[in-house]
Image (cartoon, rainbow, N blue to C red; front, side, top):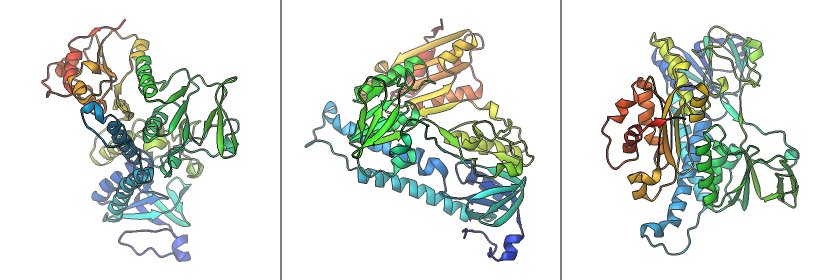
Length: 475
């Protein structure tokens, strides 16, 4: 039976199941975009049905941002404790990590957030919550555990999940995704990670700091390949300095298990990695294959992403797709912005577009990477006349004072229009400091506006105007 909430009596008689219940809007999925949209529509007086089959809050709350960044914080505390002597602090004995307590802390953070989202939805005056699996039975009809719901507007916010690649032997060994890593309450003796991008890097550093041996396997020639080479090289140095082993250009990835140990082959002729646990972090796919989209005539691309236009509308009138399932962004903040675009257009008479969005994201290793706009490589490919400014974090006073001087900052500017094109801040506080650049770009202001602004001392952000005051031609 599905669990529902609202002000109506939802019995489960055969007559009720045969008769469709009509709503002004149906929202499929209680991830980042869904609950906020339910709130706006409910406040506007619309009768809303919210359908969630598993965990309220979606990936971010349950297996993504909130619990993993909680783990990152615990790993940072352990790392800082081991460096206590650098700050003149004396500790008695070696630093230990209680992984069960670390997990319990992350569980509490996720659980509190999940229950908060569910309570919010169930308390909305015009919102009825259905706990079950939604499948389309027509363009504007959805079935949930045998109950038929119809609406003039349907919003799909079904999210995504990790991909298990088709590699030799992988089906015969136990492998973990980011979801399985959340369930670990033991410390891996040796964690092998397949995939050298954002998720893989974050887990590699945190488990090395917890005390595991870690080997990171990447089939490409460098880590985090979408970033500029100087960023990639700096990140490689950071993780290698912490004792993480790298296997790049891995051209023979295959698996076997013997006596509870997983053998990970990476290169022909090289000794394999002997791992106790394996994390696969090679990409994600949308949760669209079991929604019955074909019954509604909703178009998807070759990868299963729901095709949407610049307003997030699908090819079926009155149906929108938001968040990870639409392929227009793979972050919590892009999913939430999808909600803002749809709500503004439907309720506020605006004409907001996805194409107006500036790409922004972060990598949460320590130190973090904050990114906005184009990479230097992309600017070069565009042929735009450009200026570039850089500064090592070793020449940022706040970083020196904190004893955290790894990384650098880089800003690229259009030489003709004086508009900021992109920036990367790899360093302590980089995920926060980058927002001054984001805001300036969003406002459409020239880089000189930020260059001439007074910043607080001592901060990381105060050196951005200095970088902008020392730009050189990008050659």
